[in-house]
Image (spheres, rainbow, N blue to C red):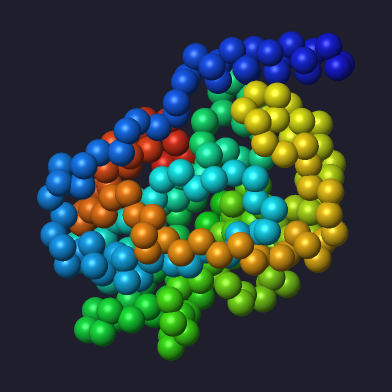
Length: 234
């Protein structure tokens, strides 16, 4: 069993090496001709991320997509890796997440948010609460509106469930470390697993802002062709 796992890991390593850098050089914003007002709006509504304090992977790319007719902005986040399963040769080389921010069309103040949580789209109102804030799960980057009652999450997708999964999946994490680097596992308390205290404002991390209802061209230009391609709008 161990020999088979090592053989798979070796094949995955070769595959990862052949892929090389997973994202192209960031294109010049001038290529897409986005107006300054859209840039200013996207920067003003860009969420503040609160990463789990031991987060092992960097946030490599951010694209903000301003909808041309609806008051909503999609912030596409490209993390370097997912802690689980990315040693497999057919896995995506990165981890894409999306946060959607709705806003008042007159005041441009944030009014609501949607986030991805492992296939479930979470929604919360965000009225008179200042800049949007997101808690980011260790290693997997599931996104939670800050302050949400996590007891309302599906039982198989609760924070406690994922904490248990990461203990059971230590062999998977070790294979990932062999292929692309990263942690050997999460060896802390559940309380620490919920410690979202590493602050990362997105305002100055936007690689590109576009105004369109079909962001494929922009996402391909910044993320490359191989990424999760999650839904564009909530």
